[in-house]
Length: 213
Length: 88
Image (cartoon, rainbow over all chains, first blue to last red; front, side):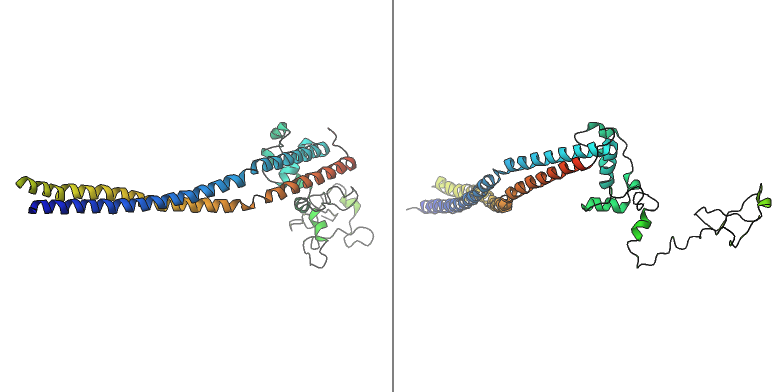
């Protein structure tokens, strides 16, 4: 055999060897891909099977929750009127008034009253926590739970062992009567200007006493 | 004779490199897909595991129904106890 023929045979063998090597490698890679895709398909099928009943269950839950919202909104509006209902909702969840009540589209146009100024923050906190809030328990003659000014005082009386210094240091009420330390002459008092007790000292109580000017 | 040598040279210097280049490209592409497929399979398995808690939705469904039922009973009592608003 001539030398050129031998070289050609070697070249062809080399080419075939290279082709076989790369094709076998490619086949192995494709088998790995097939195996991975089988795993992925199995996982996806599992996902589909597991999530199949979700739609029905969630729809049922939403229907129940919708019914609850309708019930509670209707009850709240029925008992507190739409305006106060919006205010109460906004007091519990600030900013919720802008969204309004779902079944009462007119509630979006209502300017929410500041229920927090009527009911103390503590009362709203109790309501928010779901505890028994004394919103409706206080009678008009009872503790001033609904009074925005004295509401905090009523709350502080719950902690009698703590030293409170705010109302106790306020100016005392003027003593009046025959034993009063400051006497005045009614004749001079008539028509004359009156001085306010503690004038200029920051007495915020507005207590007025009669004193010689 | 010279043509045979030329053919050998073409075979070794042109055909063989071209075959190697093309087959190497195919093999690299196939090897590049394998990690992606592996990650997809892992993600699918993880997603499937995440859905293991789905049966708890049935418990949630029952609890929601009971809660709404209790709220309805409570609301009915409140409706009796409390006066309606003036405008209602």
